[in-house]
Length: 230
Length: 120
Image 1: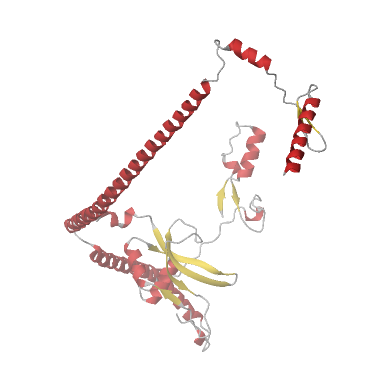
Image 2: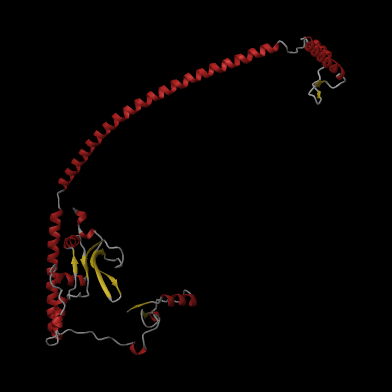
């Protein structure tokens, strides 16, 4: 059990009386316990001024104990020193030895590293030449293909131009515009047609049916004549 | 080398950790930071101690003296109960408290009934 300020009490005091009230004055000190009673309960009135009596060893026993403790401490110190010395001896090495060992390690590591670098360099060289070869081959193929495509394209364009030139002979130009108009008026074209149940197609929309019919009849007659004669 | 000196290391204790459960204590002997709670992770366990006597009336102790020496050389301190135990084990000199208890036991021993005294 030890004296301390009850934090809850302190906060309450500050909130109720403001900061002017100094809780660190001796009146607010109280001891705190952690069992049985609530921790804020003060010391019982009957126990308030009680001073527990200090237990006393018999004098001879105390003297003997003191002697034992002194001896014990000395012996412990000796044991500890011995163990420390043993440990230090087992561990100790001079700095020059350690440094030389570090240098050796380092030089060996560098040598090994150089060896590995050489090996890797050789492998890399091989790989790079191979890759360059493949790249060159690929570029060549690409160029050949591009050329071929170009030629094909030119051929296609030539064909188109030729076809256009052929067509251009029949184009209507300002020179032959009148002729073309006359021709068109002279030859009206009618794409409409009629079809009867027998499948006879009759072209045109305006009153040429009879002509067609006549033509068909003639054809039929011709066929019949041809059949009878053979 | 200078960094091996004990005073530059954190102050360590070799002490008990109470494991087991209610009414059944069992202790690990561990190296720990002197300010750490007993149930925190120890630096190293160097032994165990079963304070309840078994069927053969023995309290079993296991100690790794190599590691205890090592940590001792690195500045670890023993707790008092462990000092007593190590005194009984012969690693350290006998602790005065052990001697005192022995006196008292001898004084309080009932006639011819003290045969069942614990051996360590």
